[in-house]
Length: 243
Image 1 (cartoon, helix red, strand yellow):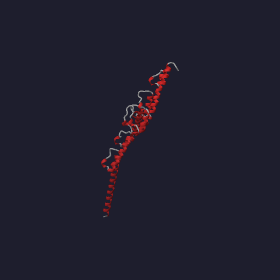
Image 2 (cartoon, one colour):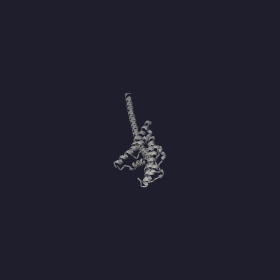
Image 3 (cartoon, one colour):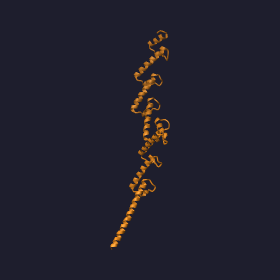
Image 4 (spheres, one colour):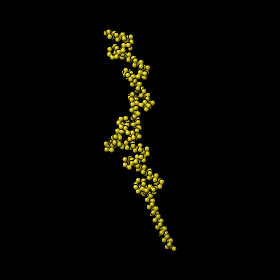
């Protein structure tokens, strides 16, 4: 009887040890499979993953893809990046390229820097799809300033609809000064209707003085019909040699 109990105990202990070893082996195998999946190895068996493990593996793969893109590895899949990650990557790429160009590295892409410059200056070939979000902001600001400059100088490329309220006032003042200048010079582009009453009076007085001087000296265009009685008399005396 004692022998039978002892034998049974030995058998049970052996079975327990066997099952413990088996369970440990299974647990180790599950852990290894999870690690393989997180590392993206071919030995990964996704069918053996639990729902939470599949989520962890997906996050690990995403982090690995972000890292691959940051390191310019061929395994980078930009389509899997979030919009924020795409922007951050583009900014990092730009900063790295600028550093490479400054340091004379062979990895420098001057075309990329030239593209940014072309977009800002509105000259050459501009590929907006290659701009980072910060570069797009810079380009839009540069375009706006170009438009303000064009409007202030009266150039054809001016778009008044894109001006702010303050810029509209500034441009109107520049246009008025420019019109007064061409009117004073007697140019054909003068718009007399845009002159203030004071400016029109001052301009008329200046023109009468110019006409009188021309008639008096015989130099320049003279219109005798615009001379006053006193001015006509002075011109006649001048012409007759009387001082």
